[in-house]
Length: 158
Image (cartoon, rainbow, N blue to C red; front, side):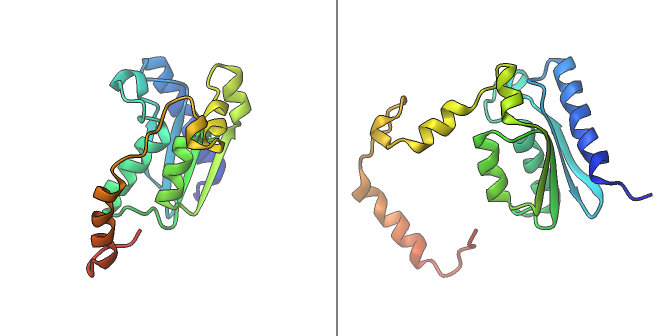
């Protein structure tokens, strides 16, 4: 029997509940599927690991990439219990799955205290207007490394 999108999205929702009930983190879960089979899955583990990047999507992406031996999730589909936050959105674009399905919206998440709007607002600001200061310095010392990368003949583009 072929599994449909709702099957995998239900699994992501189940992982969100299981992780929340275990106390591993917030109510979020993610599943990555390739060729109709789950290759990675995770719930949010931020509070249990003291890792602010341990969102369900990021953890599942890490597992899937390790399993595939690749930094790209070509021909994979990501299913997540909630619309990805800005960090996860960035990770998803870097991993390049073919599609993402999600259940709840970022507005739903905001209603229960997971409001990422401040991050979207910060991204839109000039560096000197952001709440956390970002100080640009030592550019000249850093440039030779980028020049070396640019000239590198055996680099792997990504």
